[in-house]
Amino acid sequence: MPVSTQTAHHLLPPPAGSAHRIKSRLAKADLRRILILSILIGIILSACSDTEGQVSISSTAEERAIPVRLATVQLRQDEELLRFAGVSRVRQRALLTFQVSGVIQSRNTEIGETVSAGQTLMTLYSPALQPSFDAARHRLAQLEADQLQAIKERDRLQTLYERGVIPLQELEQQSTRVSSLMSAVSNAEATLEQAGSLLREAALLAPFDGTVEQILLEPGEFAQAGQPAVRISSSSQLETEIRVPVHLTEGLHVGQQLPVWSSLAALGSARTPPGATITEIGQSSTGDSALYPVVLALNEHYQRTGEALEIGVPRRNQSALVIPMAAVMRSADGLTVFRSNRNRVQRVAVEIEQLQGELAVIKSGSLEEGAQIVYAGITRLADGDLIEVLP
Image (cartoon, rainbow, N blue to C red; front, side, top):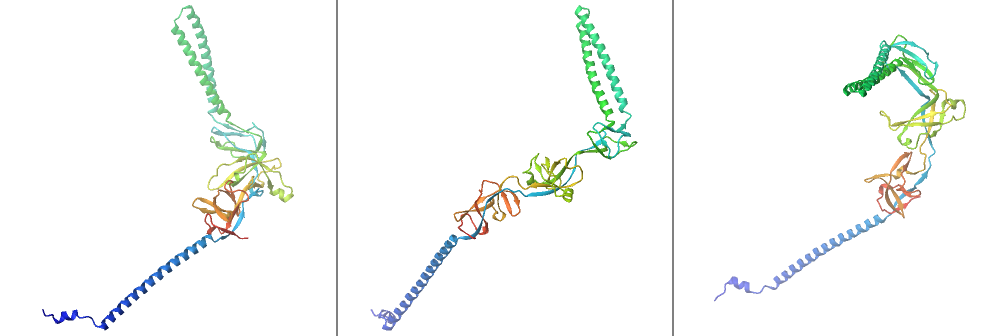
C-alpha cells in the first residue's frame, strides 16, 4: 500500500540539530528546579536559625539577674508621742430640771454660790400637787379602817361557824371582802407614794456638792416638766476629752496613764505637770468625724476649768515588725512583698496594721525579724526570678 507524504514525514528520524535543542531545554529545566530547591532549603535553614537564636536569647534573658535593692524587716518599739489638744472641764456636772409643771415660787441660791448635796435650790408651785397628796392620804386611811373592821367581822363569823350557828357560805363571803379590801389598801398606798413623789419634785435639790454655774428660770416664770432650771458643777474633779484615730485606740486601755502638757505651765515654768488617767474610750465615732473620743481624769494639780492641754498618746505600746512602704505591692491575692531567698525572690502575702510615715507596720507570721525583702526594682520581678543585689 502506498504511504502518504505526511505519514512518511513522521516516520522519518529527526534531524541532528533538533535533538540538540531538546537536550538544552531539559538541562535548563533541571537547573531551574535545582535553583528553586536550593532557595527553599536556604529559607528553611534561615528560619530554623532565627528560631534557635530567639530561643537562645529568651533563655538568656530569663536567666539574667535583675538588679534590685533589699531592706531588712525590723522589730521596733515606737516611743514617739503624738500630741492631741484638749480642754479641762468638770467631771461632775448637771443640768437640773423639774419633773412637774408649775410656777417658780422661790429661788434660794445665786450664781457662783457653793451648794451642798441635798440643798434646796428652787421651789415650784402647782395647784394640783398638794390636793392630790391629801386625797390619796385620806383614801388610804379610809380603806385601812374598812379593812380592820372587815377582819374583825370575819373573826366573829369564824366563831359562829365553829358553833354551827351560820353556814359556811356567809363566812366565805366575808373572807372574800377582807381580801378585796387588802388589795384596795395596797393600791391606795401606791397612789399615796406617787402623789408624795410628785409633791417632793416641787423642790429642786442639789445632787452633789458643787457650784452654781447658771440660773435659767426666775420666780414667777412658768416651768414646763423637763425644762432646764439650774446648772451646777463640781470643781473637785476635772477631766478632759481628746479625739484620736481608731488605730491609736487599739493600744489604749482604761486606767492607763498618759503625759499631759499645760499651756500655763509651759509659760510659767519648765516643770511638766503630772499625767492623766484614761476613764473612757469611745467605741464609735459620731457624725462625719473619723476620730474616736477618749476621756481622761485630771489629778489634783488642775483646779481650773477651760485650761488648754496637750495629751501625749503613743503610736504603739508594743514592739512591732516594720518594713518600707515602697516594698509593698498590690497583686491579685492582696498586698504582697518579694522576699530574697538565695539570690531568688519569693512572693509573700502581708497584712498591714498601720502606717508610720514611710514605714508600714505588719502582723507577725508571714515575715520574721531580719528577713530581706525587695524595696527597689519590684515592678520587673516575678515569683522565682534571679536577682542581683545592688549596694
